[in-house]
Image 1 (cartoon, rainbow, N blue to C red):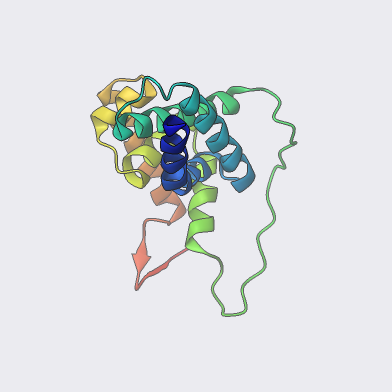
Image 2: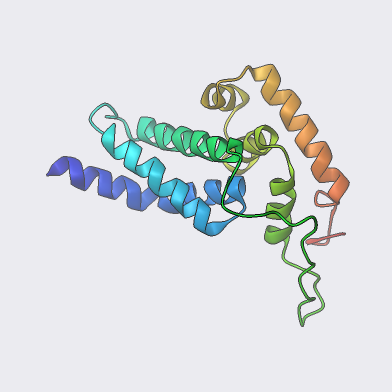
Amino acid sequence: MARDEEFAAFAAARYRALVRTGLALAADLGHAEDLTQAALIRTYLAWGRLRDPAAAEAYARTTLVRLALRARRRKWTGEIAADRLPEPPPRADGDAGDLAVDVRRALAALPPGQRAVLVLRYLDDLSEADTARMLGISPGTVKSRAARGLAALRQTGLLDLEGGRHER
C-alpha cells in the first residue's frame, strides 16, 4: 500500500509540470493531458525500479517526450490540418493575443526534434547533456537543433520583447 501512496504523492506533485511540458510539445491541452496520463501509467508500472524521486521524474519526462515524438510521426492523427489557421479576434483590451498562445503556435510550427529540444532546454531547464540523454541524441545535435529552433522563433518576432509585451 505504501507504494501506491508514494506514487500518488509523486503524480500529484509533478502532474502540472508534466502537462506543461506536454502542452509545449503537443500544442493541445487535451493531447498534453493524454500524454501525461500515459507517461504516468508507464511510470507507475516501473515504480518498483524507481526508488529515487529524481529518477521517477526523469523517467516520466523521458516517457512523455518519447510518446509525444512518436505521436507526431504517425501519418494519421485523426485530424485534418488546415492550410492556414484563422487569426483569433483581437481582445477587448487591444492586445492582439496572449504570449503563451503565440509561443505554443510557434513551437507547433517547428519540426518535432527542434520543439522537443527547446522545450526540454528552456522550459524544463535541462542541461544539454540531460536533453541529449533524454532524446537519445548527441549534445552537438541538441546544440544545432536549439540554434535552428531559436532562429525560427526569432523570425516570428516572439523573442523581441519590449516593455513586457511581445512585438509582432
